[in-house]
Length: 441
Image 1 (cartoon, one colour):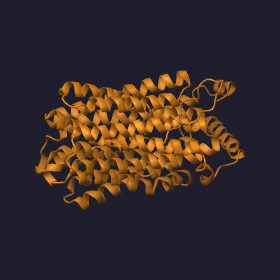
Image 2 (image 1 turned 180 degrees about the vertical axis):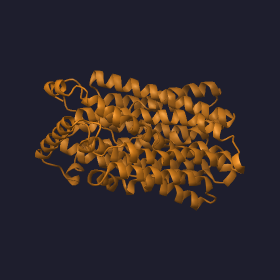
Image 3 (image 1 turned 90 degrees about the horizontal axis):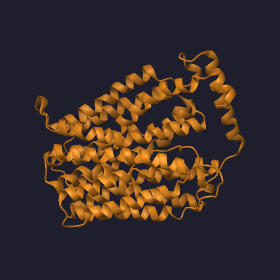
Image 4 (image 1 turned 135 degrees about the vertical axis):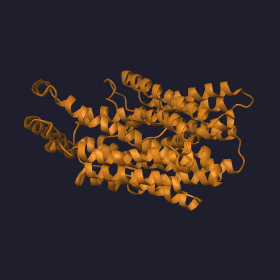
C-alpha cells in the first residue's frame, strides 16, 4: 500500500487482517490436529484393534495419497467458485470422517478412513493461498501466510495433552481413543458452519468495509494481477529443466520423509523409551512441539533480519539430524534422551520458513509460481513414504535407535541437497517473509 493510500485508508489493512486471519489460523490448527491425532490415538488403538506397526504406518501415510488427488482442483474452486462454501464443505466432511475413524475395526477400514480424510482435506491449504490473493497484496499476503507456520507446532503442543486426557475416559462404554477422534473431529464440523456465516469471499462482498475501502482494495489487487500477467509465464516442463527446482524438491522430500515420521511416531517412540503412562507420554510430546513454537519464532526473526534463507534452512536440517542422532545413542538415561528430543523440537521447526522462501530468491517469479506446486507435491509424497517405511522398520523389529537414526539420516540428506542450491547475490535487504505452501515438519 502506498503512503498516500495508507493515509487515505489508515485502518484498511488492520480491518482486513482482523477479519480474515484469526479464523483461518484456527481452521489450520484444527486441520493439522485432525490429520496428526492418529499418532496420539495409537497408544491405545493399536492394542485394541491388534494392528501391527506396518498397518499403522501405511494407514498414516495413505492420507497423503488422498490429499494429493484434489489439491489443485480445490485451489481452482476457491478461485472460480467460493472460498467460503468450499472451506465449509472441507471442514464439515473432514470433521465427520475424522470422528468416524473412531469406529474402524479392520486394517482396510482404517486405510479407507485415512484415505477419505486426505481427500476431504485436500485443497484446504492451497485454497488458503488463493483466498489470501483475494484480500492481501503480495507483501501483506506473505506475512499473513507466514503466520500460519506457528499453527503447526501450536496445534500439536495443545493436542498432545488434551489427547492424553481423552485416552483415559470411558464415556458410554466407548474407549478413550475413540472419544479422541470424536471430540477432536467434531469442532471442524462446527467451524464449517462458522465459516459459512463469517467468511467473506472477496472485498466486493464485504459489508464490514466502506464502499471506498472495497473499491480501493479491489483496484489494488487487480493492478497487481495485471502486472503479474504482463510478465509472461513458465510452463511446468520449463521449470522441471531447472537444477534448483530439483534440488529444492528432493531436499524437502528427504527432510519431510523424516519430519512426517517424527511427528506421527513421536508418541510411540517416547512411550517405548520411557515405559511411562500414556498421559506422561503425551505431555512430553506436547513439550516437544512447544519447543517447535520457539523454533518457528526464532527462525523467522533471524532469517528476516539477516536476509539469509539457504543457510538457515540447511542449518536447521543438519541440526535436527545431529540432535536426533544424539537421542539415538544407546545407553543414555531417559531424561537425557528427552533433552536431545526437546532440542530436536526446537530445530526441527527452524527450517521450513526459510525453505519456502528459497523458490522466491533462487527462481524467477513466473518459474517460482509453477515450481512451488511441484516442490509441494514431493513434500507431501514424503509423508506417505516416511510413515509407511517407519512402520515397516518397526514391524521387522527395528529398535528405537535404528528408527531415530533413519530419521536423522533423512534430515541430513535434505540439508546436504539444499546446500547445493544456487542463490543469486543481492545487495538489498532480505525479502519479506515467504509465501509458504503446505509444509510439514
